[in-house]
Length: 375
Image (cartoon, rainbow, N blue to C red):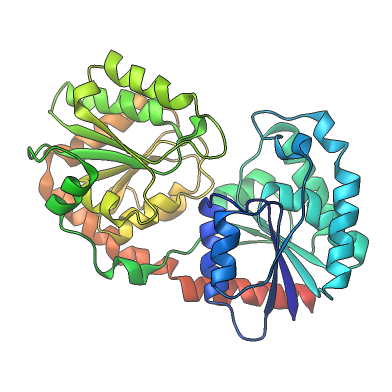
């Protein structure tokens, strides 16, 4: 069957793009992919390097600039024309089924599939509040045969029938070898003074909670000297958040203890350098960094209001903390920082349990859903 995989981002890849890329690399032979993106760039080039044909559909700037933090009724004025253009592309490419991978892909490509008389599957990856949540539910009801949610928390968030929970994959083969901790810290520019290192890895956006990370780390540092690493960059939005974080680190007395590390295409050195990984997001839909850290043998402390609850077994391979409880987060970190045996045992359990997120297994499950949807 010929499946159009539609994704809004063609430039800098995020978690949704990494998951789609892994799925395509493990695609069963009975699925012929056609890639449709709303911009060209780094991710589009990666797909071409894999040997996939990529169609770029231009989206007006007023629609591209709409985000969950900045909704705009003006952006919706551009929708009918783009939807019609995408529907024509589906017909020209003789598409049998449409898979939408991101929010704007749902909003544009699922209605386009309906217009073209083609069934579609929505792969839900974001907890969007307000009008966005209403829009996703309406589009799913009218345009989608099946939905895939990347966590139980996300499935509950939209509460729609015909939704299957399938966790995101990770390329576990990459983590059979990770750098030595000393070499990793040297590579990241982190002082080799033996202090425990707490870190947060991924794109820097406000909802990811880097400010919460620094406040929890400051509370830990008041009891046990530590170092902190913020690894990533502001992708898609919130570039002004980065200088705010530098100022906050200074205000909390962590300026000399905090290392800001640029985006790493290969994050293995980031995880190898850490003693404890932190995920401080508000309603994290899944938490790819948690399973990457686990694959590297590093335990994670996270809030319990999102996908982390699907990944972490509290007290075994990491810690789950009530949403928004910064003091509780700091206490969970202190437990791991103070007790190296508990920390190392949690890291080993996390590595063992990361096998659940194997990429080939994920591809088989998603492919079965696509086949059922077409049938």
